[in-house]
Structure formats: C-alpha cells, structure tokens
Image (cartoon, rainbow, N blue to C red; front, side, top):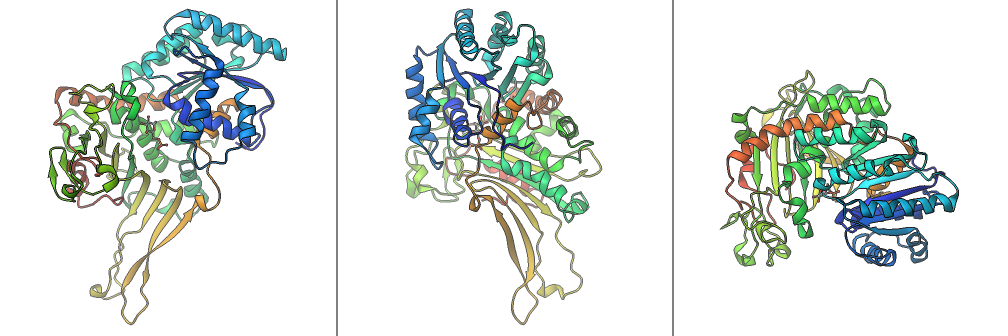
Length: 522
Ligand code: BG6
C-alpha cells in the first residue's frame, strides 16, 4: 500500500453533486493536494455533474473560491492551482433524467479521443443518499458504467459516500441496485474516518508493539470511550441532515468504525479481504439491543438556540434548551437552534447528538463497555478514543500514600492527530505519592497530515479496497441501528435538550456516570 508512487494511468473522475459541501470542502482540496504532491498522472479530467446551470468556467471559479475558504492550513500554489483548474469540466444535469447523462457520454468520449485511449472512469456519488438510486439507474441504462471498453468491468469504478442508505432494508436495496451494474471489486463505499492517519495507526500500534497486545482484553481493560465532537451545526446541509441525524450520519459509520479499529481481532490475512473480513466480523459481534434496552443504553439530543445572554450561560445554569454544562463565550452569540436552521422542519425530531453504550459478544471483550458519543454544536471540535485500563491494585505501598490511577491510552484524531499514554510515576519527594505523567506522540509536529480523502481517492484509483467498507460490514452496522431507530420512531423526544457549547444532554453524562465512570474528554 505505498501511496507515494505517482499514478500512471489517466483517469476521469465524475463527481455527482459537484457543487455540494463534500465536493468543495473535501474532494477538490484532496485532489489538488495529490496534484501538488505529483501523485496524480499526467493526464486526468475531473467532471462536475450537478443540477446548477453552470458552465465549466463557473465551476472552476466556484472551486477557486472554495479552496481559499475551506483549505486553509495547507500550502497553496496559485500557478499549480491554475494548472489543476484547467483539468476541471462541468456537465449540468438532473440526476433523475437521462439528458445530462447523454451529454456526459459525449464529453467522456472526447477525453478518450483526445488521449486515443479508453480512459478509466470513476463515478463519485457525493449527493444526498436519496439520489443514489437515480444515478445508478442512469449509469446502467446509458451504459456509462461500462466505460469505452464496452462490456468490460475493468474500466469503471463507483465510489459511494456514507450513509449507505438510511436503514438495513435501504442498504440491501442499494446493494442490489449496485450489483446490477458493478461487481464488488468495482465498488468503493467511503467512510472517510478509515482514511485518517490515526485510525490506520491503531492497528499498527497494537500489533507493532508487543507490549499492548497481551493486555488488549477484558482482563486488563476497564472500558473504552470514543467521542467525536463538532462545534459546527448543520449550516447549509439541512436538506441532507433532516431525517438522517447523528445516528445515521456519524454513529452507524464513523463511531462504529472507530470502535471496530480498537476491538477487531488480528485478521487471518493482512490483505484487503482479510482486514475487511475482520472488521465485518467485529461489527457483527456487537450486541444488538432488545427494544426495552434502548432507553437505558442510547441517548439522543438536539441543540437548542444559544440566544441566551453570555452572563446567563454559566455552567450549571438552566435554559429552555437544557442545562449549560460548559461555557464558550464566542458561541453564545445568537447561534440558531437546529430547528431554526435553513431547510429544517421547525418541529424536527432529527437528533444532532447521540451517545451509546455498546458491548461485544466475544471472549476478548465480553462485559467491557464501549461508550460512544457524537454531536454537533458541542463545546469544542475534538475526536478521540480512550482505552481505559483497570486501576492498579497496589499492595507494595501503604495504601494511604498511594494514589495510582488507571492508565489511559488515548488516540487523538482531532484537533491534533497523535497518541498519549498516561502512566503513574512516583512524585519526587519524601513520601510515596503518585502523579500521572503523559507520554505523547504528536503527528502534527512532524508534518501537515493528509486530508483522509487523499488516501482514499488514491487507493480507489489503484484498486486497493482495504480502507473501503464491504457490504457485510455495512449491513451489520445497519442491523445494529435497526432497533434503535424503530424504538425512537415510536417515542417522540423532548427536543431541544442541549445548548450550544455544551457536551450534549445531561442524560449522556448519566449514561456513563451510572456505571461509576465519567467522560474523559471535557
Ligand atoms: C461527515 C458527516 O461524514 O463527517 C458530517 O456527514 C461531519 O456531518 C463530518 O461533520 C465530520 O468529519 P471530520 O473529518 O471533520 O471529523
């Protein structure tokens, strides 16, 4: 999996949903970074396909604005950007009508003619999931999916953003639809968390250091906690987010993949299929809830407005939107409630926060809780996984003098990627008192990390599927969500129940505190 070799084969990447959030914030910057690193081939074409009546120049201008706005913190070379822009084209089209697709065929044929070759085609579905069926239908009917080597499946690949459907039945239907046109080897289901450096490092860290694997089990580990916290709200994504919510947007994919990265067994083979099979097996071993267990193990929340005076927003104070657990002055300045966001139903019951307590049914992890939480408009942008070991039972010192606490191994994904282990060491002095000392490794001190989409796009172009979710993995995760969504559908929530700049509803704290533990990320 060497990602540093420049691709040789030309390609055309068609982005469906080219003017959407994902394309402008993540995909185009990732492609540009690959271009600057000289990892893309000499000849390639990026075609945006969307409903907007744009020209190619309009799309180039649109992306030029977007890269300045969203890709801060990365080196930007204006001359290289101009070269890169010259490779971007636009084809307007309605996803549900064949006209745009026919025009697209003409455009792709011109690329083939220009290079006098069958240029491999990548179709990236970066639209809301409810458009996938239409796009797949027309890719099939117009034979766009076959590429110019008619009838041959080696010329095309399809990349699909999560959420892969909205339910188990939906995901199965989508799989069926995909299978009519593409073989599994052509399908790249994207969960960009798998492209993050630290996530890949979890396996390397566990298996590359003999000191961890022997204690990686229920005998030594007390519990695991995973948090993905965002400060952003849904912003312009109301259309997409309504009816999707945090459970489908983040838990079914990103949170479960992080849990799996910690919990997975060593794969039978260290190849794409071995690693994907190990992931799928782990997800299938997560205990599904009975309906009566949902209330005790899953918490949902939705942010209320922050139209509270900063002076009132003190930790512990109560507002209509819940109890303020923390205070962030910058954010308390008239931030809208979820229900006030554009394209959101003013009575929406879509959750913007979810916390879950999950367990696994296997020898290594039986009885060990995994506490997971994610939410929008929380106190800070942070993502981390903490493996909390059992507290040491010290017999060698006088217990009154000893205060050694549990070791914690933390994988940081945001804001800086890195790893910390907290250890107990004797404090300097004439008594035996412990202090906690962190041992840290910070990636960002070494170099600017790649946007995870760089790795994923490059791997897809090379035909490397390890970091893409396989169908059994996705179906197992939907299976797990099914009871939760059906219980929620029958019991309307009391929303909003948390304020902007907090850590979510108080029930999320209670979820872990009732087990005598607490969230470490605060
Ligand atoms: C996306 C979700 O998959 O991940 C977004 O659809 C979320 O709602 C984003 O904001 C978070 O990704 P990251 O990499 O910024 O943590």
